[in-house]
Amino acid sequence: MKVFIDESGDLGWTLDKPNRNGGSSRFITLTGILISDEEEKYINRFISDIYRKYNLTPNIEKKGANFTPEHASYITSQLNKLFTKSNSFKIITITVNKSKVFDSLRKDKNIFYNYVLGLLLESEIIQHNQISIFLDKRTIKVSHGESFPDYIKTKIWGQGLDIEISCNFIESTKNKMIWIADWYANFVWRNHEDNETSSYNQLSEFPKISIF
Image 1 (cartoon, rainbow, N blue to C red):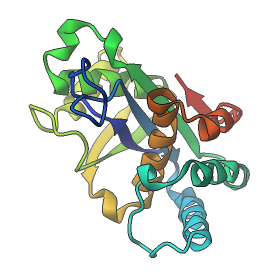
Image 2 (cartoon, rainbow, N blue to C red):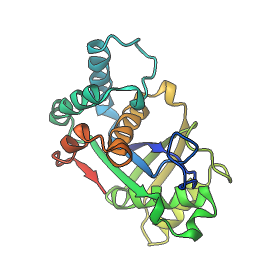
Image 3 (cartoon, one colour):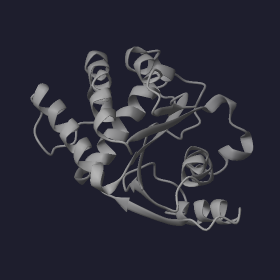
């Protein structure tokens, strides 16, 4: 099984000023797209359909933040077609209200990011014998580099679970699985940050989407 990760929001802690006006985002959302090798083709077709509908340039990444609320709502409304074709496809997402984060976790962005990503992935990883995790090379720049592989292996293997885990850092511009992770990270984040609920309300209705 593969899981592709992206996020929306930032890791700043300037919460006494408005977001986008000198302040940091109030929330951060991490989203994972689970899919098997043989079923990635369905996501590729899903994205191609969206690109055709909105006359987007093929193979050029369209960020989730650049979709209007109406477009985000439409894209989400089409997910049933994808779920019907793919048995392995699943969306998992977690959103953190940064104002409630312990001061101790705010000391190191890398440790905080790893902690939240571990919360997102642990319950999924333990359901498989093997899992490959893919993260965008351009993801949040953290202080100690690519330390997540060691963190997640320690977390899982420390429970005595013999699960094969690999972590890969890839270019999002070349991977459409990361594109769709970015889309839904943003669509969920909008609900919390900007109270833009049109897509989020639909997402919560799908049984193959875990939102926490």
